[in-house]
Every structure is written in structure tokens, then in C-alpha cells.
Length: 371
Ligand code: F6P
Image 1: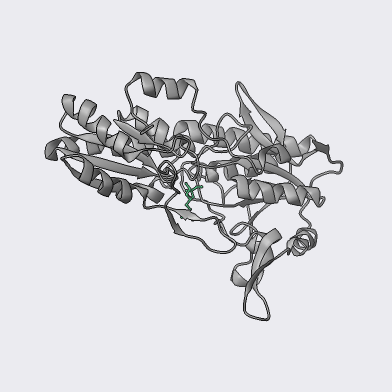
Image 2: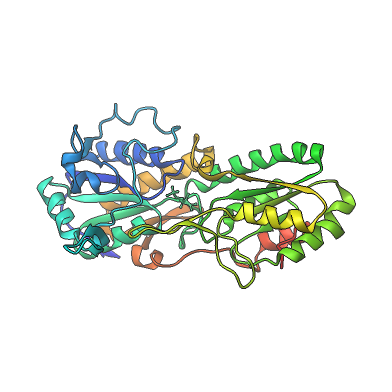
């Protein structure tokens, strides 16, 4: 961890990657904590785009963040700054002379823009992609503190990321609503939830909502085993079934279901619930239906847990900057919030361990994973 000297007068905040409930609460805490130290505070629009392409923003690529601007935003979903999951300044997609798309390092332009705007430090709020950019900027000499955000809960070195609790609480409510309709029609309801290559969302909302089957990326499934379980176990005790499937789940020996893959963007997952529902309909004597919760999991007001975590993270990020920290991420380490080097967090994913209390709980409750 690097200690940076020099008094801070002005900081910037940006939000990158997919939005998550709690972003505005972090912004609120950073701004209020910074203003209370007499620091100026600006927000960068849409990741780094406000610095990169200020001409695209009629009111400017930077927003002055005053007390009034952040009043009453703690409970709001989304982000008042806007976000993007494209346009990584270190791998910026551009058309070459022969018309091909190539990735170019344009990070120096951002460094210059920080200097031009007299910004002394950055609080970068984001998931693995944004935190890895933050780490790269820290290596280039920018004072940076990262704040871990993601509904997927797949970031390492922190016990929790904000956004996850809101996502699983909402998903649990939705699945609770599927039970009666599934029962009324004697159907198998297959519910797809987000989470990328980690099964945390599916696992936790699946257990909490009494799913019969949970399919997660960490345990490739055998559809015949799922069908056998439904016929031999589930339908012996009830006339319907709930199958929760993570968007990143894949069959044994098969691959994830991808909607699209574009240069400069992570591959977009989706469609697995339709596949599973069609296959199950042929294997079990029941009608099946699929439901994709998708982006609904990212909306809405953050739960109390997520709000508090976001506020704690935001305030801790400002304390870290004041202490001269840089190149670190604030991380939940109960009962406190700690600092961990950004390089320890980037390029690794926290996936569900196949042997852990929560998995044993699911198995003890008789939930099938298709293995
Ligand atoms: O990382 C958050 C997340 O919501 C993932 O769960 C999902 O795979 C992805 O973002 C969806 O991204 P987009 O908003 O680009 O569709």
C-alpha cells in the first residue's frame, strides 16, 4: 500500500460497470465526508467518459458535487453520475485505417485531464473491471481509492460488496411469488438470475425461497439428473417445482449461454433458463415456464444492509485518502472496514466454494444441484 503525501484540495468520484443499489449512498457519504474536510468534490459522468469526451456533455463532463446535489439520494437506485461498461481507457476500442476495430491505450489522456482539472485524487466505485482500471491509474501515479460494488458478490478480499443484498432480497420476493402460480398449474418454473460466472445470487436467493433445484456455474449440471430428482423426489411430495438457474450455469462438458460478445465489452450471458426449461419439459411430465429476472435485480432502493455498507465504504474511502492511502480498496472485514491493495483484488473472482456452510445447508435441505 502506497502512502501519498500532499494536501488534498479536490477529489473526483466516478461509477463504472453495471449499476448496483447503493451507488448513490456511497456518493453521498464521499461527498459529505469530503466537504466536511473542506475538500472540493466533482463527479465524472459515465465512468471516465466525462473526462475523455467532455464535448459530449452539454453541461460539462464533470458535475460539481455540493451538499444540495447529494441530499436525499441515499435511498435511490442507479447512479446520479451515470455509468458505463464500455470504453476502458487502457483498451479503448477504435477504428483503424483499414476499418478494423483495435484496442488503444488512451490512459495518458485521462491523466492529463485529471491534472488539467486540478483533481488530486479519485474515488473509483466499481466492480472488477473498474477496480482494475483504478489499479492501473494508481500505478501511473494517480491517488486512487476503490470502493467495491457489484450485485454479483464476486469480488475477493471483502466479505461483502454493496448491491448484493438488495439483489437477493428482491429475487427471493420474486421467487416467493412463483410458488403459488407454479402450484396452481402443476408446473416447473425455471427462474434465471444474474451473477456472471459466480453462483452467489442463485444460491442465496434459491435457498431463501425454498427452491427445489439450484444450478450454479461452480457445479456443471446434468439435466438428466435434474429431471430424475424432480420425478423421484420433488413430485412425490408436491405437484410443482422451482428451479433457480444462474445466468452463468453450464451443463457438464458444455458451455455458458452467451447472448452477445463485442470488442471492448465483457460477453453478455443469458438464455440458460429457456434452454433448461425446454429440456426439462421433454424429460418430466409437467409443463415448464421460464422467467428471467435480469436487470430487475439491479433496480430499486438499496436495503438497509446495502445502504449502511455503502455509507461506511464512502466514509472510509475519504478517511483513507486523508491518511495518504492510494492504490487500495476499502473492504468489509467485520466489525470494521479495512484497506486492501487493489492489485490483490483485480483479475481474480470470488466464486462459490463447493464445500462451505452455505452449500452444506442447501444439501441438508435436500436441494439438488444437478450433480
Ligand atoms: O455485473 C453485474 C451484472 O448485472 C451481471 O450480473 C450481468 O451479467 C451483467 O452485469 C449485465 O450487464 P449489462 O447491463 O451490460 O447487460
